[in-house]
Length: 413
Ligand SMILES: *Cc1c(COP(=O)(O)O)cnc(C)c1O
Image 1 (cartoon, rainbow, N blue to C red):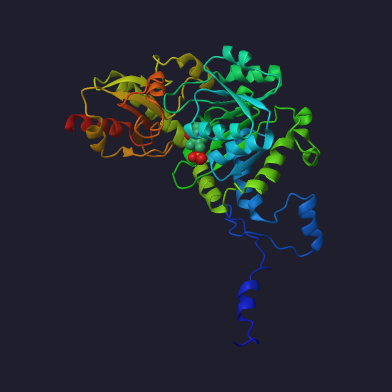
Image 2 (cartoon, helix red, strand yellow):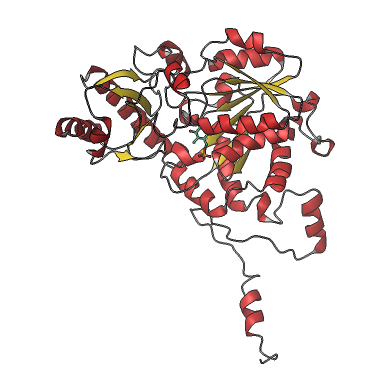
């Protein structure tokens, strides 16, 4: 081995001090784990006061760029991105609640969120589930140790719509945090602050990113909650603007403790996807309304659930929340008893059999045998889910092509 040869040293160090002085239209992907400092004072300041970057578990400039975009969409005071939607939900609960705290939760939530809440209970956090399509039940669930109310906007798979404005007023009146999972509507249709949510999260893996190529999640503080008297903020984060205390604690402590950080590569993909989010979701929602109307009049389907249909139990509520022209991309519908569900689904040529949601492509899945596979028959009956219940996540194809695919699948069978 030739110890005189600087080849490896040159490979490692020769490009480090090149200036990065161009203005790329797409924000660069910071494919680095850590950052070098010319002066030790700057290194120290990054730990003690400056918002800079030292190690990528606590974020990269690429994730900050995405956070800036989402924060602008929500008009928030701060946004943190996480490695998935579940990581974002976990971030809020693990950072802002502690053993002995209680929260109120909608009955109608994503199954994996429900699963996470059962984990939280093992750590001494208490929860009461209520029907959030109306606010009457909230008052009865209130306890002296209640800190937060959690709800989604439109539920998966049966599309119940929560009375978000009612929940927002209730939380304001009782000084509670309103944590909204708004994955289904996106800030294109409804911002967290429109319904007085204190914190709003999105699974960026769904229609925000839209292209089914990156997992991600975001948490935005809308600035409506006053954290100055909230007990679970560490002394260290009680500095400067109190509106930012919670989001700072999530960013500084949750990402550091749990490492649920969004990668720069995924942040870039989601950021590119976001450029077209309004065009995509508006088209998907329009398609979904058209498809729901088609399914409702089709002799092959019954129990079609879509908040945009007049027959939907919360149609008026959904219209008042969304301005009456955007009811999400999710439809549930029951295939008629005299059709063989598996044979029909296997005939799809365009519609994809898959469990994801909010893709550009239209997806379909039978609910009882898959996402609700672990549920008891009693739970399925209570939720009105039969072995022929299908969930559609409507994409941005030509609506007529989706309808034709369903028609040929039913007729070929
Ligand atoms: C998918 C989803 C999540 C979880 O998001 P991931 O990015 O898959 O972790 C949370 N809430 C809702 C409503 C979702 O649809």
